[in-house]
Image (cartoon, rainbow, N blue to C red; front, side, top):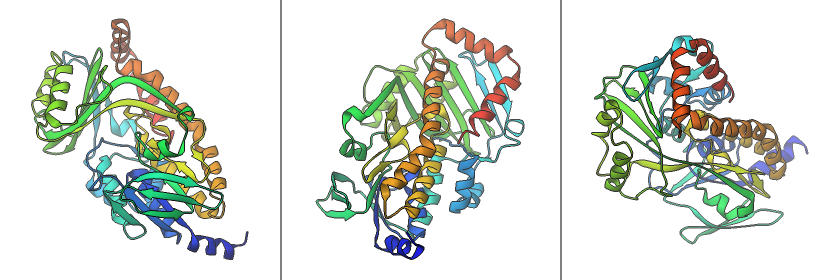
Length: 392
């Protein structure tokens, strides 16, 4: 197909992206800049806030630079300089200096919501972003996808990209249950920000126990982020803030003094982030003219440390392929999957294997982990993290 036809195809194409997180907005910017009409629907009434500290390194760092968000992120980021790992008594097991750890790695570590905000600031010029909107039905044929929205509207699109997270409605509508494998990790995660009562100074500390851990990190001179992970049987968290606070505090009864200090500032008046941790695995990331990206396709969970990076790199690759093959979206989707899926599958397995060390269920594993951190040469862990953060 000649370039003239390709430009004509782009002008006539319409792409729907479900979800205005990192993956969805990344794809929207690239597609919109190419001249393709892009609609983004986001079920929340506001752009997504909150979230973890994320690492954009290697390929993700390059994508951030291409998108034009690297410079504003560098101005916003509160740089972490060191990390340490402690047992439940507060005894330090391992300390790592980031200049030594990432000295040869192109990396930036912003907050997830700052990344999303920077992407949103650019995407609004290149896509129609509709908040408080979602989809309720999809029907496709060889020429396009008919979509019914949550407000009853209907429209037809050249292709649909599901970037709506681990609980993806796009995945539910377009894929058969037999196509989806959910790896339940048996864990809950909660996160919030609070005043810096632990006196952290550009550092990341983890307090590790059997069945649970807390990670806390500097987000500003006077603010910290707190992330709690614990073994939990409940299938879903309470919907309200007080219920979540009660569940979290009960899970961390008799935990480290540092965890208790952070829990004193657990929000009571709002439903802070809390969810059950699971990985989504699919044989194929696309069905016809509908493709998934980011957590909707392959949730890695926070244990990988690469979820945001994988979402950004995958969305960029998918969007660039669609720009080339807009006349044949399935060819674009196949190319995207062929380039990305084997790496993601390996990362998912490695993450599942690592969970037992992060949240040991047996005392023998906890003992082995703590002693490995205490006595193995620091270079072992430096090499591990350097390899981890140059995978995507």
